[in-house]
Each structure stands twice: as C-alpha cells, then as structure tokens.
Amino acid sequence: MVPKNSAEQFELAFWESIKDSDHISDYEAYLKAYPKGRFAALAEARIARLRAGQAPAKSATPAAPSPAPAAPPKVVHEPTRPAPAKEREPAAAPAAAAAAAATAAAPSTPASRAAGAEFKDCPACPAMIPLSAGTFTMGSNSSDPSEKPAHSVTIKTPFAIGKFEVTVQQWNACADAGACAKASAAAGTNGAAPVRDVSWDDAQQYLKWLSSTTGQAYRLPTEAEWEYAARGGSATRYWWGEQMANGKANCKDCGQPWSADAPANAGSFAANGYGLYDTSGSVWEWVADCWHNSFKDAPSDSRAWDQSACTVRVIRGGSWREGAAYMVASTRFKYDASVRHSQNGFRVVRVAK
Image (cartoon, rainbow, N blue to C red; front, top):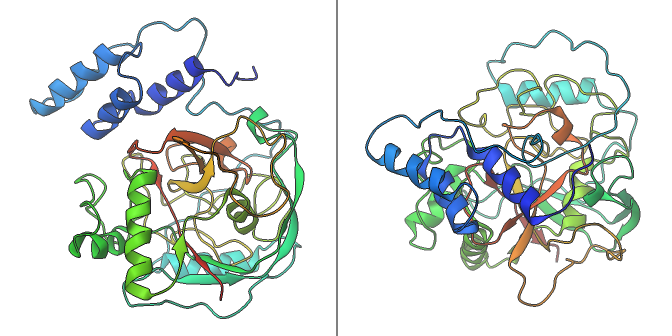
C-alpha cells in the first residue's frame, strides 16, 4: 500500500516509532507535536508511569482505521533479494575494519570526489571530508512518493562534510561551554555514539558555537548536499549497490553490531565511497531544507529549498530502529524543527573557502 502524505499518517507514524519506548522525552516530543492527538492520553499515562519508576505499560494502542506501517511509512519496490549472508562478528577495531571492508567491497563507482585531505579545525571538532563539485541524480521514481521525481542536481560549489555524525563527546564540548543544552541522560551516556534527542533548533546552537570557536562557517548540509555525499558516488538504491548487504549500515536488518536500545558507536560500519560513515541508519540526520511533499519544482542546484516561517524540516538516512527499506539513499522524512526525538541527530558542513 502506498502511504498518503496526510497529517493523520504522519501522526500515526510518529506514534508507531515511540510506542514501545522507555524514554520520557519521546512521549513529550509526541505531545509537543500533537497536543490533542489521538494518542495524547496514552502518552501522558506512559510519562506518569515512567516518572513513577515503573516500566511503560504494554497496553494496546487504539485501533487504527487501517494497518499502520512502521514509522515513518516507507514503500520500496525492490527486486527479490537473496538470503542474507551470515552476519559478521564485531571487529576489535570496528572503524578500521569497516574501512577495509568498504575498500574490498566497493561498487564500481567513482573512487572519490575528495577535494583535499581530511581535516579538523580543533581537537573537539568533527572530522571533515572535502568534496568537490559534481552532478548526480537525486531522489527515486521507485520508492516513497515523497522521493519523486528523480531529478538531476548540480553541486556547483565544493564543500566539506562531517566524516561521522556529531558525537556525544563533540556535543558535550558545546554544552560544557554553555552554548548547548546538555544531552539527555539516555542519549548522552556514550561519548563515541552519535548525539541524538536533539532538535533542528538545537543543532543551530551547536553550529553557531562551532563557527564562533573555529572562525569558520559551519551549517547543516542542504538536502541536495546530503544526498550527494550519502550516495558516495553511486547511483544505486543503496550506496553500496542494488541489494541489501550486512555490515554496511546500522539498522535492525543490517547485521552486527546492533542493539534495539541505542545506535552503535560512530564508525562501527563500513564507509561509503567518499569515506563517510553512517549515512544510512544510525540516527536520522537533520538537513537545512524545509519539508516539501515531493521533489516537484525542487531546485536543480545545491541550495537549500527553504521558505519563510518554515517550522517543519527534513531528516534523512533512517535510524538504527528501522529496517532495510529505510537504508536506501533517497529515504527522507520530516519533523517539526523544535521537536527532540531519540532517533534524530545530525552531521555538519563547512563552507569551502
């Protein structure tokens, strides 16, 4: 069934993604987005139980008019996949092993569009990968309706993008300086993990601090820049090819290491053709653009597709809680810019000089 881009569908998708959570912030995020929503009473009850030190009740959610897909809804028309290969065991040095695996199993795509060497502007800053200009096909005509139509986009200006998603340790440098809110207890316990439970507005505070600290211009990637980088030079469904494969992304269908409770540490899976990690799975990543229901009339260059007084922003890439269908390079969804959700994080872009 092809999902409809309706308010009811998005609310149901939001609830499906948190209904079994044991994090108060997830239910608070739902109530902030849908204060009079169909699950508001249940969300308030879950919050009360969690605050009382009890496990969240496993009561059934109110019946929906039709079966609800996992959130966010995703329809991907894929060829029949072969049986999954045996899952690999976690390596002692996951980032290094992942890089080697990526090199050994890289698809026949351009080797790299690196415009220079990897760099960091300060010890606590994200590692950055420079990318040169280029043209690619954005979106998909065989996936979710919001990803249509596939269209040619030209990246005219080189830019540098985070090698990893911003980590808890990097976020805490901003928090320690008093420029960012402390990471939530559930999302801030592992410094090497991607920071999450941060809103689009929170990300702006981090970017402002990072720019001020380094004297460089940092921002969120535009949606076009994000997909260009995430594809790693490929034009296939996933950045690694047309078929799902273990060890390429952090998702519940993607192989080890995986846990339902939290994403793996940054860099635990293979890098794409541009040397970027976790562009599929791990945490959803905020980008600069305002949400539009499709790519009809989208810009043909790399600028952000924005509009005045925009309150709903785009997230990309899926998270560790989703399945293989969400790992395709064109996957996109939306959230209110002020909403914090335990599956949402971001990576940064630095403007090239």
